[in-house]
Image (cartoon, rainbow, N blue to C red):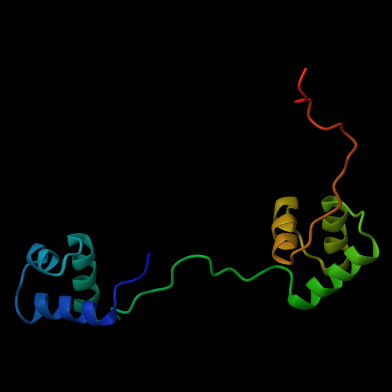
Length: 128
């Protein structure tokens, strides 16, 4: 879901503070929620910015792009590495502690899939 535009934010604040409309009247007029109008009024009265803030997912990756290229070099040299072996090498070489599922997601982002193990037979769904 996208944030409301600055134009709308300014019009709502103007309607509430300059024109004297109530929170519920402004919410009905601009087809937004009363909670959002109340929050916007509080920010404006406190002198805070009414610009939209960041929305989630702003986490720096643990493995840098330089380390990623070295990791891909390991995987090309030894394609049979397991996720646990990759985990151990990352910890040993770069001091990076990552869970196995995090390593799997990182490898997916790098468009790399590990060798599939066929130690177990295929599932038994054959017709009888």
